Image (cartoon, rainbow, N blue to C red; front, side, top):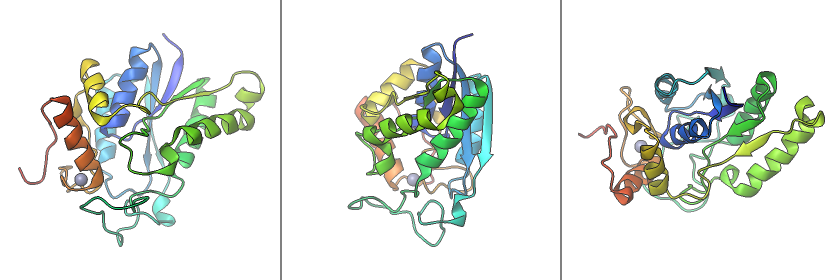
Length: 225
Ligand code: ZN
């Protein structure tokens, strides 16, 4: 058994690839998902399916209810998910989401005795989210080692971002080599009740362009076909 690692697993393409990378590096993987009031809640079924298929050592889904504060098209049904590219930080940005998620991951890592946390943030194809930048991740890591007993007692945590410099096509190529079954993943911000992708949101467009650029058949189930 390798060292334990906590992997944030949304059920999307990036986090499934991140899990495969952590496993390929020999970590014993504990996957962590969040039921945070997201409109694309069917991604949680995908996360559970991926966790099973990739034989993780443990998978937890933690309830957070970020819809109580809203402020995002993903957590407030009164704000529509855009069907076209927008300027600036998009309305699908969820206030403080990665800080909340990483904080829970940090707590679980401390309980498990894990010193490694993996998150599939990406600064290349990313949609303008401030909490996907390398400087943010570095600052969180510094904070984490001030905040925890493990950090104070000399067992510092490391935040791994294996996708941070990769294009979507690179991510898909790497994941395909590692055997990720992308048909199991859901990236869409606005899927229908059966989990079929809208094809027009930011996340769908990035994903479709990634498969095209990688020259790999897109296995996504779309609503129109
Ligand atoms: Zn979509």
